[in-house]
Amino acid sequence: MLKLLIFDLDGTLADTGRDITDALNYALGPFGVRTYSIEETKAMVGSGISKLLASLLPVNDEGTRQLVTDRFISYYSEHVIDYTYAYPQVKETLEQLGNYKKAVVSNKREVLSKEVLRGIGILHYFDVVWGSDSVRAMKPSPVPLLDLMNKFNILQEETAIIGDSNYDVEAGKAAGIKTIAVTYGFRSRDVLKDADFIINRFDDLPDTLHQINETGH
Image (tube, rainbow, N blue to C red; front, side):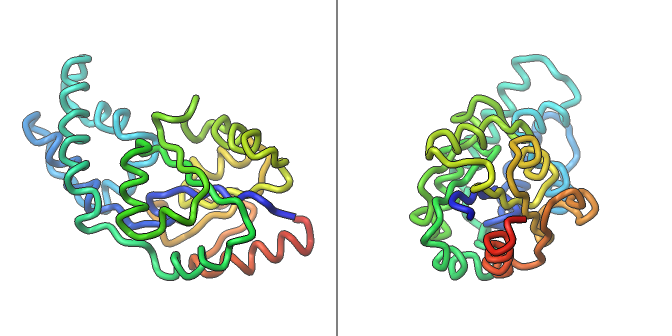
């Protein structure tokens, strides 16, 4: 029987694509880097913004990396929910999941993750929100998932992760927990093929959880 649900944020609970793209283009603007589209940004994000920004810079010294990261954080902090919204049926479905412990583990920084969740009105549904700066290792490492299970004293077979990317699936597999991938997010379906379950809508989640609880797999 499942007891703990671990959710990804970007591309799973909320469409943050435009606000991240705007901040990305602002941060890179002075460095002669081309402008990126929302779809391009969605395909690139997931491993943490510092790593992404560094990979896009024409010069990659430490000072430049820090400057561009600071520019991103400064801009994004001011515009974190300008265009961000919860995906369809997220609030209504979370309302049905009161019997579960629920956590968010994002590779976005914790304060920004909480700002997004607060801004779209769903922060109160979660017992814990961890970001890239509040975990010992970021996804696809299983470490934050294992740390959460330890925190709540909950077993692997009682835990599932719900996410839109290969990072979530890989982290879940490495942690030995159930993996549920969503197809409406930032990644294409083909990178989600190793998930235990694939759902096309967030409100398909309760049926999937029921199936796991009924059959044990």
